Image (spheres, helix red, strand yellow):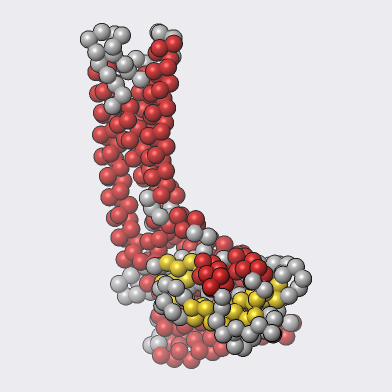
Amino acid sequence: MRLTRLRDVFWFLPLVMGIAAIVLAQVLVQVDRALADDTPGWQSGFFVRVGASGGRDLLGAIGGSMLAVAATSFSITISVLATASSTYGPRLVRNFMNDRGNQFVLGMFGATFLYALMVLRAITAGPTVETTFVPDIAVNVAVLLAVVDVLVLVYFINHIASSIQVSTLSARVRSELDAVVEELYPEHGPAEAEPAPTPGGGAPVTSSGSGFVIGIDEAALLRAAIEHDCLIALVIRPGDHLVEGELVARVHVTDPDRPERSPTPAVADAVGSAIDLGETRTPYQDIQFAVQQLTEMAVRALSPGTNDPYTAHNALNELAAGLVPLARRHAPELGRTDDDGVLRLIVTRLPMQELIDDVFGAVRTYALDAPIAMTAAIMLARRIGVAAVDTDVRDHVLAHLDLIHDALGRTDDPVNIDFCRGEIEQTRAAVEASNQRA
């Protein structure tokens, strides 16, 4: 789980590529030395030989130009980050930071510079040919890397131009939403899942730190509960913010002859190590954060400074693509049992009703005067309501449609009011028909 966080670290891939470049340079220099000692004159016909002075000039030009291109590319990336942050929301900056394309491009330029530097220091010029050493293989590989870097630069220009487009941004966020739905709300739950009661009491386990819950290792918690013969009931979920000392779980001892008012240190440590805290939220297990990113795109597009209802329309359509598959699945069972069928763990999941509240609460506030966005929101309600398999979800959609219907009275455009209310009536009829079929 913690290794996944390296995806969001901008420097990790460039660091790995830089280390690989240094190792490659050292290896090729040693190969050159070995071949020069064992097979004099082996380079003829295979590699271009430029001599000590030419090799230094060539590597110096490659290294200097790659460092300059890397600086320019980094400046372009920072400019794009500033634009995305101000236009679509600061939460979407993470999508540029963890973009493998951006990381690879800057890593490639930096790695080429380090490679050229390491090879350059291996060139020695003596008074005779025998005392002069030029790693011809390494120098030719540097030229090859320079050619590749030109292609990488062309790729970067195309990639950075496409990544700032609304459709690309919203599609990336929706793919993260799809991934978290598949992980937390699978169509077929785990074999050890079962309905969970709501046990009272239990020994409290508190947080050892402060921050956002960005991940919970439920498999590790289940193993710990089995090992210590207890029931662990979580009271938090990814996306919650904790302050040190706040409650995160309750531990229930399965043996009634061993009542405990506080968990054993081993159980408390197991619970603490299974909960990953961070400074910012991530969408890997936090479905609400993934939904809020798309909702924020729609809301910021409807601000007076932006006034782009088509971006809001696009974001709401992507929300439909992510939420409709979730609506087609029943609420997950929260209990986890061991091999003997004994309940060992109670997990938490965000009800879909809360996701619906996040989306339509924002729409009702900001999209009243934007018929294009409001139409997309009503279509989103229709898609979710018709696809929902749980009656509670359909009823929640109908309740929000009623709220939007009433809120439309605050607008000044009678044509917009009549059109949107007509769409709401058609959507309500379709959702109610689904209720009757169910």
